[in-house]
Length: 112
Length: 114
Image (cartoon, rainbow over all chains, first blue to last red; front, side, top):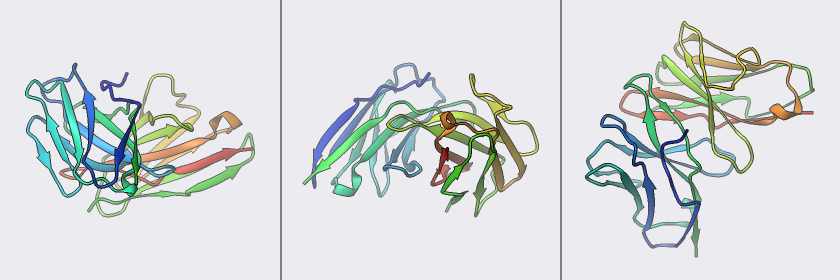
């Protein structure tokens, strides 16, 4: 019942930008897009989230299309430590009680 | 910041016994916490939403009598796996939401039932 679609896996060269796409064509007007990543056997780590405007923080940039049906997470200079499974999630529910339903994610491998 | 602590990180128990996992929000109050389980090479599956002072809301297909959730205070939620069996072996992860910080996850508990 996940509402997002992501490629199963991607490779990226160390030092290059990693662009991870996500399709969320059924997103509703008040639903946020969240990105998390999970390194093996650890809890997910928050990366970024947004509603309709592009967002940037110290970790990444989030580009959301104007129709909000898809988004792209950009890691500007990927390092080997960025190798992880990246999850694009549409928050389900209202502002305080909303829950995160995870899809299958993209396994990103950063290679030397 | 928003820190969520989960304990224990790893537990092995005998089949038929019960195991309790704790999830604490260390520097904020969390009226709502979430419990997930994750099997090897699979994604996280939401099990239930834990609400402080009220009953948990379980996702479809999750046995509420098997996975007991208690959220007795604004900083602590517990998940008890009752009468554990080998098929309950999994990675259990909790999460809490702090306004303006988003959802923070614990480091997970690896449960092995032998």
